[in-house]
Length: 358
Image 1 (cartoon, helix red, strand yellow):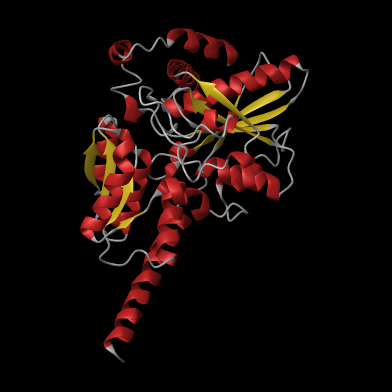
Image 2: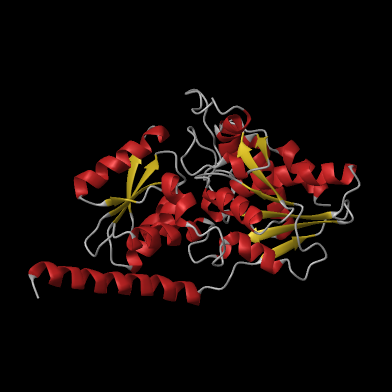
């Protein structure tokens, strides 16, 4: 055997073991729960939360991280000595650091300097390194620079999210939702509501709905200071004005990401940051545990859709995502002094959602 052949054999052996480890981890992990929320003021309409906080790394991004690693492994972009790098606002990096440690790889997260400290601690806990940038718009270029500097691989969630996940099925989040609704009164939801950070989740759900020919419609809830909903309404808008900044971590972007596929989306609803926080706080009181800000964004959009359905005399089900737990935001969204300093008047929205939830 030549040296080249031997190297290839070793690389393939490592690759097989890496994929086996990720598959074994998946087999050990149960599916996430679908929680029904009673809406006593809206008889005939059911609201469900797909609880993605129950993943091993605590958020929806666990699914994405697994898919991105498998995508890179099967494309021979990661080997036993590869330094793995990502541009992330936090949750994706937490999940990716988990998989990197599983494979014995160095991992660097390029994050905005404003990322919640609890998220940074979670990345470090999983063995990841932190590389901060002051301007959130610079994370992409800095991640690419570090990949060149280290000879590593930039996972690039914002480009690869929509292509790394099998949208036809294979127990993706959309297939899981429909399977869990099978015995409910309204097994085919009227609406599924999600946010967009990379755009990968909305692309997966929207494609799956069309592939299976369901009548379900997809709504993407987007922070007001995000380019996605503006691009959806006017494709010529591709970059957010520099003086605007979204304060809801994990969703909303200053530029239209390659993984954002507007054609699979039926509707977008823009939500003010203060309203997202208010909805998040109200929902947390109802279910007895803290949820993150992006879940509040989703709930605000659900409230609008449910009220419109009720006004038209419609019945049916609406499903949205509980994206992550709220403990990571104890010093921000759950800190009244921090919210006041940021000028976020959230209490009116909290009262509105408390009434909506009965």
